[in-house]
Amino acid sequence: MTNYAAFYVGRGENAEWIGTVRGDGVTGGLAAAEAEHQPLDATTENGYRVAVTAFLRIWEQWVGHAYLPDQVDRYDYSELADLAYTFDGGRVWIRRTRTAAWEPAHALNQN
Image (tube, rainbow, N blue to C red; front, side, top):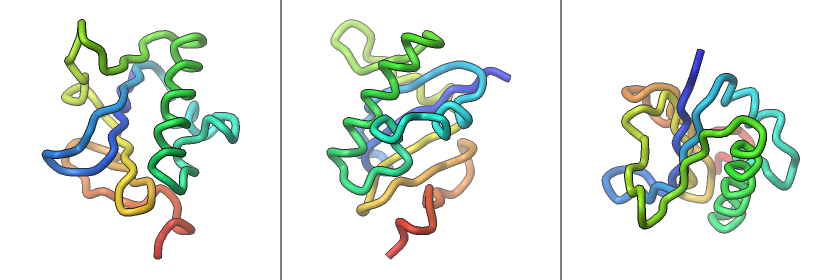
């Protein structure tokens, strides 16, 4: 099944979109990402941004269909996203469907 996964910093209407990927196995691709390209393990906002950027670059090289904010195409593809990931409040969060509640990516990141 083809999935879209959107990446943000923050939640709610002020969330900043930082990229989207499209393709089969997005969740598995994230789990298989090399340590320095693993957005789900980020512990700082900057670390998350760096990991997402690296992941999007690798996804584009291997799968194609990585979308980044740019001046030409400002559409964030988030309405198509089955999954959403964000860094907020010092941890990474996942929303598994458009209507699901946000949940921590890892229990270890909880305070």
